[in-house]
Every structure is written in C-alpha cells, then in structure tokens.
Image 1 (cartoon, rainbow, N blue to C red):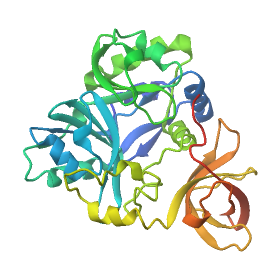
Image 2 (cartoon, one colour):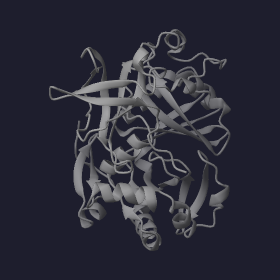
Image 3 (cartoon, rainbow, N blue to C red):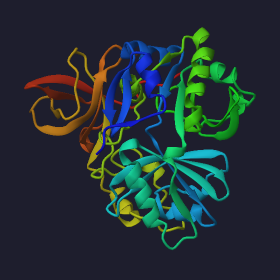
Image 4 (cartoon, rainbow, N blue to C red):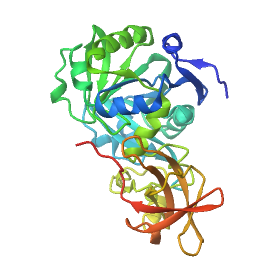
Length: 366
C-alpha cells in the first residue's frame, strides 16, 4: 500500500508542528502538541479534525436505495432525505467488512462514508453487489475534503460562520449550506461522543475552510486535534474501531450492534442467512473494562478468569482515560462473563491485573 497520500491540509499540519504518521496509506496528523490537551479541549470546548482520509462513495439512480438495501445490513430505503444512518457491510458469512455512515441527499442520491483502510474494498463491493440494479456506484473520495468540529462549543463556532439553522439540525441529519461563504455538506455526526459537525467540501476550499473555522473557534478555545486523541475520545464513548472491535471474524451481534441488522426488510441482502443464525449464537460479547490500578490493558492482551487464570477473552482497545482518570479498555469476553460487575483480570506482561466489566459507554455527555 502506498504511504504518501496527503490531504490538501498537509502543509497546514506541518506549519502547526503536527507529529505526522502513516494511517491507511495517508500522511495524517497524530497530534499537534499534547493528545491529552486535545482530548480535553474536545470534551470541554472544541477540536478541529482533518478527516479527508475517509472514503466517500456515491450511489445514484432509480434503484440506488434497493441496491444499498441488498448490499448493506441496514434498511437504507427507509432513510429520509437529508438524514443519515449508521450501518455495516458484511460478508456472506456475517463478518463485518466495514462500518459505514450512509447519507441520503435525494430520492436517488446517497453518499456512503467508509473507513480509510476499507474505502477501496467497500467501493468495489458496492459495485459488485449493485449488479442487476439500475444504480451507479462511483468512488468520489477525491472530490471531497472532510473536516470535523467536535465539542460543546461546536454549535457556536460553526453557527458564527453560517446562516443555516444549526439548533434545528437533528443528530444524524445533513444539509447543504455555506460556511464562511464556502459551499459544504454540513452533517451533525461525529466519532467523539460529543456534539459536533462534519463538513464535506471541495478539496480546493479546504485551507480556507480550516482557517475560517480556526479563527471563529479561537475565542471558544478550539484547538487542532489529531488521530491520537480521536482514538481516546471514541474509546471513552464506547465507539468501535475497525480492525480492533470490528473485523471480518466478528458479527454485529458480538459487537452489541445487532440493532443495525434489519432482518425484517423485504429486500434480501448479503449475509442475511448467516446473520439470522448468528443472532442466536453469541458466544463472545464486547464489553468495557476498567482497572483500579495504573497499568493499562492494551489491544491483544489476554483477558483471564481472576481466580483460575483461564483465558476468557482478549482486549481490543485500551488507554488511560483522560476524562475518567483510570485505565479503560474494550474487550471480547465469553458471553457468560460479560455481565457488568464481573471481576476478571488482564494478563499484562505475565502479571494478572484485576479489571471490572462495566457497561458501555464509559463516558456519555450530559
């Protein structure tokens, strides 16, 4: 995989002194100064993210809704115009290929947003699965830049640059607007556990849009935020990450996301038979873990029975929680050990560190 794809804001990140990293072949900002400070800003004021590495796939045509009903596990044809829905694309065996957000911009116009690491696979799968439908699937990722403003001050910041009625914009809704005079698709979505907006714009407008948001956010304490704090924010919010909590070897039911699988829709869809069986055979479950100690459970560490040492699961993500002040983790454990309050342990370099199973999310905004 190439590792030199750069967003139109690459020079801006360098000028801000960002520590850059490779992410799914993209050169992306990991942090600017302190990931803890960036995390705290998103929880208390606001953070500005460059998410241009995400993939945008347009599906259009008379059968666009039916094609997506067939390709994805969700009931896409039930999405209202200017609304969005979280869903997944699964294999025939019920494993998760990627988790997605689908925006409906018109009766026959959808934008599917895929994770950067899976964008090509999702685009190819949608094209293959749309064969036989009167629908056109086009990878439009090069036509979009994507910025996100997340945090309690996000409405005030974005609202100062647009005439759009932001208080009336519902969660998981989208509209055409101008922000700082720049045409954008403005969505009330995000991946941090906070209120916020994602702004889709033309790549040529990305620097001007970033600068306008930065200037408008300065009185509110907005800071540029990188991928590192994005990871701790989504972990606190109990949001899964593809490649960690979600994989081709994982079903939505194991991930506590069975609600996105619409077995009741009339359109047959890829993976339906396997998923219908999987809902009644959940042998492992995604849970939250907190530790009373200071050592952090990390991805890949074994989860064991606190008394016998028997392996009962594996950590998928873990980090110190800047908001809660304790180590937190998500893990798959045997379903009979998934009840909140269960005491388990994590094998951290040969030492069993006690952990408690807790309900997700760890953090929920007031």
